[in-house]
Amino acid sequence: MMTKGEYRGLMHRNDADLAAWLAKRPTEAALEPALPIIDPHHHLWDAPQRGEYLLPEFLADAGGGHNVVSSVFLECRSMFRADGPEAMKPVGEVEFVNGIAAMAASGGYGKTRVCEAIVGWADLMLGTQVRDVLEALVAAGNGRFRGTRYGTSYDEGVAGKYVSRRIPQYRLLDPKFREGFAELGKLGLTFDSWHFHPQLPDLVDLARAFPDQTIIVDHVGGVLGVGQYAGKNAEIMPVWRQSIAALAACPNVNIKLGGLGMTSFGFGFHERDIPPSSEELAAAWKPYIEPCIEAFGVNRCMFESNFPPDKQSCGYTELWNAFKRITAGFSASEKTALYSGTAARVYTMTTP
Image (tube, rainbow, N blue to C red):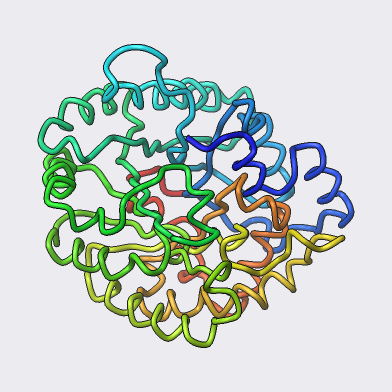
Protein backbone atom coordinates (compact mmCIF):
# COMPACT_ATOMS: atom_id res chain seq x y z
CA MET A 1 0.00 0.00 0.00
CA MET A 2 1.31 3.47 -0.88
CA THR A 3 1.90 5.91 1.95
CA LYS A 4 0.15 9.28 1.97
CA GLY A 5 3.38 10.96 0.88
CA GLU A 6 3.91 8.56 -1.99
CA TYR A 7 0.35 8.94 -3.23
CA ARG A 8 0.49 12.72 -3.08
CA GLY A 9 3.77 12.51 -5.00
CA LEU A 10 1.93 10.67 -7.75
CA MET A 11 -1.15 12.90 -7.78
CA HIS A 12 0.85 16.14 -7.26
CA ARG A 13 -2.11 18.10 -5.86
CA ASN A 14 -4.61 17.48 -3.09
CA ASP A 15 -8.32 17.62 -3.90
CA ALA A 16 -8.75 21.32 -3.10
CA ASP A 17 -5.66 22.43 -5.01
CA LEU A 18 -6.62 20.24 -7.97
CA ALA A 19 -10.10 21.75 -8.11
CA ALA A 20 -8.63 25.26 -8.01
CA TRP A 21 -6.17 24.41 -10.78
CA LEU A 22 -8.83 22.91 -13.05
CA ALA A 23 -11.02 25.96 -12.47
CA LYS A 24 -8.38 28.14 -14.12
CA ARG A 25 -9.64 26.88 -17.48
CA PRO A 26 -13.41 27.32 -17.89
CA THR A 27 -15.12 24.04 -18.71
CA GLU A 28 -15.53 23.52 -22.44
CA ALA A 29 -18.89 22.75 -24.00
CA ALA A 30 -19.19 19.02 -24.69
CA LEU A 31 -18.69 18.03 -28.31
CA GLU A 32 -21.22 15.62 -29.86
CA PRO A 33 -23.29 15.66 -26.64
CA ALA A 34 -25.79 13.06 -27.86
CA LEU A 35 -23.18 10.33 -28.48
CA PRO A 36 -23.74 7.58 -25.87
CA ILE A 37 -20.67 6.85 -23.75
CA ILE A 38 -19.93 3.88 -21.55
CA ASP A 39 -16.99 4.90 -19.38
CA PRO A 40 -15.26 1.51 -19.00
CA HIS A 41 -12.64 2.53 -16.47
CA HIS A 42 -12.90 4.68 -13.36
CA HIS A 43 -12.30 4.32 -9.63
CA LEU A 44 -14.05 5.19 -6.38
CA TRP A 45 -12.37 5.67 -3.02
CA ASP A 46 -12.54 7.36 0.35
CA ALA A 47 -9.30 7.20 2.27
CA PRO A 48 -7.02 9.69 4.09
CA GLN A 49 -4.09 9.14 1.76
CA ARG A 50 -6.16 9.57 -1.42
CA GLY A 51 -9.03 11.87 -0.54
CA GLU A 52 -12.67 11.30 -1.43
CA TYR A 53 -13.99 10.22 -4.81
CA LEU A 54 -17.41 8.66 -4.51
CA LEU A 55 -20.70 8.78 -6.40
CA PRO A 56 -21.25 12.56 -6.05
CA GLU A 57 -17.73 13.35 -7.24
CA PHE A 58 -17.95 11.05 -10.25
CA LEU A 59 -21.38 12.39 -11.21
CA ALA A 60 -20.09 15.96 -10.90
CA ASP A 61 -17.22 15.17 -13.26
CA ALA A 62 -19.44 13.27 -15.68
CA GLY A 63 -22.10 15.97 -15.63
CA GLY A 64 -20.34 18.35 -18.01
CA GLY A 65 -22.55 17.65 -21.00
CA HIS A 66 -21.37 14.30 -22.37
CA ASN A 67 -23.93 11.50 -22.60
CA VAL A 68 -22.40 9.06 -20.10
CA VAL A 69 -24.98 6.29 -19.90
CA SER A 70 -23.08 3.80 -17.71
CA SER A 71 -19.68 2.95 -16.32
CA VAL A 72 -17.32 0.21 -15.19
CA PHE A 73 -15.57 0.31 -11.82
CA LEU A 74 -11.96 -0.90 -11.75
CA GLU A 75 -10.32 -2.14 -8.58
CA CYS A 76 -8.15 0.31 -6.66
CA ARG A 77 -7.65 -1.28 -3.21
CA SER A 78 -10.70 0.54 -1.92
CA MET A 79 -12.59 -0.66 1.18
CA PHE A 80 -10.91 -4.01 1.55
CA ARG A 81 -12.19 -5.89 4.58
CA ALA A 82 -10.30 -5.14 7.77
CA ASP A 83 -10.74 -8.62 9.20
CA GLY A 84 -11.01 -12.21 8.09
CA PRO A 85 -8.80 -14.31 5.81
CA GLU A 86 -6.28 -12.24 3.86
CA ALA A 87 -7.33 -13.76 0.53
CA MET A 88 -10.95 -12.70 1.10
CA LYS A 89 -10.29 -9.08 2.04
CA PRO A 90 -10.71 -7.81 -1.58
CA VAL A 91 -14.34 -8.96 -1.45
CA GLY A 92 -15.02 -5.88 0.65
CA GLU A 93 -14.26 -3.64 -2.31
CA VAL A 94 -16.89 -5.31 -4.48
CA GLU A 95 -19.42 -5.14 -1.63
CA PHE A 96 -18.72 -1.42 -1.30
CA VAL A 97 -19.02 -0.70 -5.04
CA ASN A 98 -22.12 -2.85 -5.44
CA GLY A 99 -23.82 -0.61 -2.88
CA ILE A 100 -22.96 2.48 -4.90
CA ALA A 101 -24.14 0.75 -8.08
CA ALA A 102 -27.45 0.02 -6.39
CA MET A 103 -27.79 3.69 -5.44
CA ALA A 104 -27.20 4.73 -9.06
CA ALA A 105 -29.57 2.07 -10.36
CA SER A 106 -32.38 3.56 -8.27
CA GLY A 107 -32.60 6.47 -10.70
CA GLY A 108 -32.43 8.94 -7.86
CA TYR A 109 -29.05 10.23 -8.98
CA GLY A 110 -29.76 10.69 -12.66
CA LYS A 111 -29.70 8.50 -15.75
CA THR A 112 -26.11 7.22 -15.55
CA ARG A 113 -25.83 3.58 -14.46
CA VAL A 114 -22.67 4.12 -12.48
CA CYS A 115 -20.75 0.89 -11.84
CA GLU A 116 -23.11 -1.19 -13.95
CA ALA A 117 -20.14 -3.55 -14.21
CA ILE A 118 -17.50 -4.17 -11.53
CA VAL A 119 -13.92 -5.39 -11.93
CA GLY A 120 -12.29 -6.42 -8.66
CA TRP A 121 -9.04 -7.89 -7.47
CA ALA A 122 -7.98 -11.34 -6.40
CA ASP A 123 -4.53 -12.70 -5.67
CA LEU A 124 -3.97 -15.00 -8.63
CA MET A 125 -0.77 -16.21 -6.97
CA LEU A 126 -3.05 -18.38 -4.86
CA GLY A 127 -3.19 -20.71 -7.83
CA THR A 128 -6.25 -22.96 -7.99
CA GLN A 129 -7.22 -21.85 -4.46
CA VAL A 130 -8.22 -18.46 -5.87
CA ARG A 131 -11.42 -20.12 -7.10
CA ASP A 132 -13.04 -19.62 -3.68
CA VAL A 133 -12.17 -15.92 -3.75
CA LEU A 134 -13.50 -15.46 -7.27
CA GLU A 135 -16.77 -17.15 -6.36
CA ALA A 136 -17.09 -14.84 -3.33
CA LEU A 137 -16.47 -11.82 -5.56
CA VAL A 138 -19.15 -12.98 -7.99
CA ALA A 139 -21.63 -13.37 -5.13
CA ALA A 140 -20.75 -9.93 -3.69
CA GLY A 141 -21.31 -8.30 -7.06
CA ASN A 142 -24.97 -9.35 -7.17
CA GLY A 143 -24.84 -9.84 -10.95
CA ARG A 144 -22.50 -6.91 -11.62
CA PHE A 145 -19.10 -8.59 -11.18
CA ARG A 146 -17.34 -9.13 -14.50
CA GLY A 147 -13.72 -9.98 -13.79
CA THR A 148 -10.46 -9.04 -12.14
CA ARG A 149 -7.59 -6.68 -12.74
CA TYR A 150 -4.06 -7.59 -11.77
CA GLY A 151 -1.47 -4.84 -11.99
CA THR A 152 2.06 -5.93 -12.85
CA SER A 153 3.57 -2.46 -13.30
CA TYR A 154 7.28 -2.81 -12.67
CA ASP A 155 9.89 -0.13 -13.06
CA GLU A 156 13.25 0.37 -11.37
CA GLY A 157 13.00 4.15 -11.78
CA VAL A 158 10.63 6.95 -10.82
CA ALA A 159 7.41 5.32 -12.04
CA GLY A 160 8.03 2.23 -9.92
CA LYS A 161 7.87 4.31 -6.75
CA TYR A 162 4.20 5.14 -7.25
CA VAL A 163 2.57 1.86 -8.16
CA SER A 164 -0.19 0.73 -5.80
CA ARG A 165 1.30 -2.76 -5.50
CA ARG A 166 4.97 -3.67 -5.65
CA ILE A 167 5.01 -6.69 -7.97
CA PRO A 168 8.15 -8.65 -8.94
CA GLN A 169 9.29 -8.44 -12.53
CA TYR A 170 7.93 -11.10 -14.91
CA ARG A 171 4.89 -11.91 -12.74
CA LEU A 172 2.79 -12.64 -15.86
CA LEU A 173 5.17 -15.50 -16.69
CA ASP A 174 5.02 -17.07 -13.22
CA PRO A 175 3.57 -20.63 -13.34
CA LYS A 176 1.71 -20.12 -10.05
CA PHE A 177 0.15 -16.91 -11.37
CA ARG A 178 -0.95 -18.72 -14.52
CA GLU A 179 -2.47 -21.47 -12.44
CA GLY A 180 -4.69 -18.86 -10.79
CA PHE A 181 -5.25 -17.06 -14.08
CA ALA A 182 -6.72 -20.24 -15.55
CA GLU A 183 -9.50 -20.11 -12.96
CA LEU A 184 -10.88 -16.91 -14.52
CA GLY A 185 -11.87 -18.66 -17.71
CA LYS A 186 -13.63 -21.46 -15.85
CA LEU A 187 -15.98 -18.84 -14.40
CA GLY A 188 -16.30 -16.79 -17.58
CA LEU A 189 -14.52 -13.79 -16.05
CA THR A 190 -12.49 -11.11 -17.82
CA PHE A 191 -8.91 -10.06 -17.06
CA ASP A 192 -7.73 -6.45 -17.07
CA SER A 193 -3.96 -6.02 -17.23
CA TRP A 194 -2.27 -2.84 -16.00
CA HIS A 195 1.47 -2.60 -16.53
CA PHE A 196 4.15 -0.44 -18.09
CA HIS A 197 5.23 -0.90 -21.69
CA PRO A 198 8.32 -3.05 -20.89
CA GLN A 199 5.93 -5.77 -19.61
CA LEU A 200 3.93 -5.92 -22.87
CA PRO A 201 5.89 -8.90 -24.31
CA ASP A 202 4.97 -10.88 -21.18
CA LEU A 203 1.30 -10.10 -21.78
CA VAL A 204 1.65 -11.25 -25.38
CA ASP A 205 3.00 -14.57 -24.11
CA LEU A 206 0.10 -14.87 -21.66
CA ALA A 207 -2.52 -14.06 -24.31
CA ARG A 208 -1.09 -16.70 -26.64
CA ALA A 209 -1.03 -19.30 -23.86
CA PHE A 210 -4.71 -18.66 -23.01
CA PRO A 211 -6.38 -17.92 -26.36
CA ASP A 212 -9.92 -18.31 -24.98
CA GLN A 213 -9.47 -15.88 -22.08
CA THR A 214 -10.80 -12.35 -22.61
CA ILE A 215 -8.01 -9.88 -21.84
CA ILE A 216 -8.22 -6.10 -21.68
CA VAL A 217 -5.05 -3.98 -21.91
CA ASP A 218 -5.40 -0.87 -19.76
CA HIS A 219 -4.14 2.61 -20.67
CA VAL A 220 -2.74 1.89 -24.19
CA GLY A 221 -0.19 -0.42 -22.60
CA GLY A 222 1.32 2.05 -20.13
CA VAL A 223 3.98 3.85 -22.16
CA LEU A 224 6.53 5.37 -19.77
CA GLY A 225 7.94 8.83 -20.39
CA VAL A 226 9.52 9.63 -17.04
CA GLY A 227 12.67 8.63 -15.20
CA GLN A 228 15.08 6.70 -17.40
CA TYR A 229 12.52 6.89 -20.25
CA ALA A 230 12.23 10.68 -20.31
CA GLY A 231 13.14 12.18 -23.67
CA LYS A 232 13.44 8.77 -25.34
CA ASN A 233 10.10 8.73 -27.14
CA ALA A 234 11.75 8.14 -30.52
CA GLU A 235 13.27 4.92 -29.19
CA ILE A 236 10.27 3.75 -27.17
CA MET A 237 7.42 4.20 -29.64
CA PRO A 238 8.61 1.74 -32.33
CA VAL A 239 9.10 -0.96 -29.67
CA TRP A 240 5.69 -0.18 -28.17
CA ARG A 241 4.08 -0.38 -31.62
CA GLN A 242 5.59 -3.84 -32.18
CA SER A 243 4.08 -5.07 -28.91
CA ILE A 244 0.70 -3.52 -29.75
CA ALA A 245 0.74 -5.28 -33.12
CA ALA A 246 1.60 -8.60 -31.44
CA LEU A 247 -1.23 -8.19 -28.95
CA ALA A 248 -3.67 -7.20 -31.69
CA ALA A 249 -2.85 -10.48 -33.45
CA CYS A 250 -4.45 -12.26 -30.47
CA PRO A 251 -8.25 -12.17 -31.03
CA ASN A 252 -8.91 -12.51 -27.30
CA VAL A 253 -7.25 -9.15 -26.48
CA ASN A 254 -8.98 -5.76 -26.32
CA ILE A 255 -7.47 -2.39 -25.41
CA LYS A 256 -8.51 0.71 -23.50
CA LEU A 257 -7.68 4.09 -25.00
CA GLY A 258 -6.90 6.40 -22.11
CA GLY A 259 -4.88 6.71 -18.95
CA LEU A 260 -2.81 9.30 -20.80
CA GLY A 261 -3.51 11.89 -18.13
CA MET A 262 -1.29 10.05 -15.66
CA THR A 263 2.07 11.67 -15.02
CA SER A 264 3.92 8.46 -15.92
CA PHE A 265 3.41 9.18 -19.63
CA GLY A 266 5.59 12.24 -19.25
CA PHE A 267 3.44 14.91 -20.95
CA GLY A 268 3.89 17.28 -18.00
CA PHE A 269 0.42 18.83 -18.24
CA HIS A 270 0.14 18.75 -14.44
CA GLU A 271 3.08 21.15 -14.18
CA ARG A 272 1.41 23.92 -16.17
CA ASP A 273 -0.11 26.97 -14.53
CA ILE A 274 -3.29 26.48 -16.59
CA PRO A 275 -4.76 23.08 -17.57
CA PRO A 276 -4.55 22.11 -21.25
CA SER A 277 -7.40 22.52 -23.70
CA SER A 278 -8.95 19.54 -25.45
CA GLU A 279 -7.12 20.59 -28.62
CA GLU A 280 -3.77 20.31 -26.82
CA LEU A 281 -4.72 16.98 -25.29
CA ALA A 282 -5.82 15.59 -28.65
CA ALA A 283 -2.56 16.60 -30.30
CA ALA A 284 -0.49 14.96 -27.55
CA TRP A 285 -2.56 11.78 -27.26
CA LYS A 286 -3.26 11.09 -30.92
CA PRO A 287 0.11 9.31 -31.58
CA TYR A 288 -0.78 6.80 -28.86
CA ILE A 289 -4.45 6.32 -29.68
CA GLU A 290 -4.38 6.07 -33.47
CA PRO A 291 -1.87 3.17 -33.62
CA CYS A 292 -4.06 1.18 -31.21
CA ILE A 293 -7.17 1.71 -33.32
CA GLU A 294 -5.25 0.84 -36.49
CA ALA A 295 -3.95 -2.38 -34.93
CA PHE A 296 -7.01 -3.60 -33.02
CA GLY A 297 -9.85 -2.08 -35.04
CA VAL A 298 -12.69 -0.14 -33.49
CA ASN A 299 -14.50 -3.27 -32.29
CA ARG A 300 -11.71 -4.13 -29.86
CA CYS A 301 -10.95 -0.59 -28.65
CA MET A 302 -12.76 1.45 -26.01
CA PHE A 303 -12.15 4.97 -24.76
CA GLU A 304 -11.79 5.31 -20.98
CA SER A 305 -11.62 8.21 -18.51
CA ASN A 306 -9.42 6.60 -15.84
CA PHE A 307 -10.79 9.15 -13.39
CA PRO A 308 -9.74 10.40 -10.95
CA PRO A 309 -6.06 9.61 -11.77
CA ASP A 310 -6.31 11.32 -15.18
CA LYS A 311 -7.90 14.32 -13.48
CA GLN A 312 -4.42 15.49 -12.56
CA SER A 313 -3.99 16.56 -16.21
CA CYS A 314 -7.45 17.74 -17.28
CA GLY A 315 -11.17 17.90 -16.62
CA TYR A 316 -13.58 15.10 -17.51
CA THR A 317 -15.35 17.13 -20.18
CA GLU A 318 -12.07 18.14 -21.82
CA LEU A 319 -10.84 14.55 -21.76
CA TRP A 320 -13.82 13.26 -23.76
CA ASN A 321 -13.67 16.30 -26.04
CA ALA A 322 -10.07 15.37 -26.83
CA PHE A 323 -11.10 11.84 -27.76
CA LYS A 324 -13.91 13.18 -29.94
CA ARG A 325 -11.51 15.52 -31.72
CA ILE A 326 -9.26 12.55 -32.52
CA THR A 327 -12.23 10.60 -33.96
CA ALA A 328 -13.87 13.55 -35.72
CA GLY A 329 -13.51 11.88 -39.12
CA PHE A 330 -14.79 8.47 -38.03
CA SER A 331 -18.15 7.07 -39.15
CA ALA A 332 -21.15 6.84 -36.85
CA SER A 333 -20.77 3.08 -36.50
CA GLU A 334 -17.06 3.40 -35.67
CA LYS A 335 -17.82 5.95 -32.99
CA THR A 336 -20.51 3.73 -31.53
CA ALA A 337 -17.98 0.91 -31.15
CA LEU A 338 -15.29 3.10 -29.61
CA TYR A 339 -17.50 4.96 -27.16
CA SER A 340 -19.91 2.23 -26.06
CA GLY A 341 -20.12 -0.86 -28.25
CA THR A 342 -16.83 -2.53 -27.38
CA ALA A 343 -17.29 -1.88 -23.67
CA ALA A 344 -20.84 -3.25 -23.76
CA ARG A 345 -19.64 -6.43 -25.48
CA VAL A 346 -16.54 -7.04 -23.39
CA TYR A 347 -18.15 -6.34 -20.02
CA THR A 348 -21.63 -7.68 -20.92
CA MET A 349 -23.45 -4.41 -20.33
CA THR A 350 -26.65 -2.78 -21.50
CA THR A 351 -26.20 -1.57 -25.07
CA PRO A 352 -27.16 2.11 -25.42
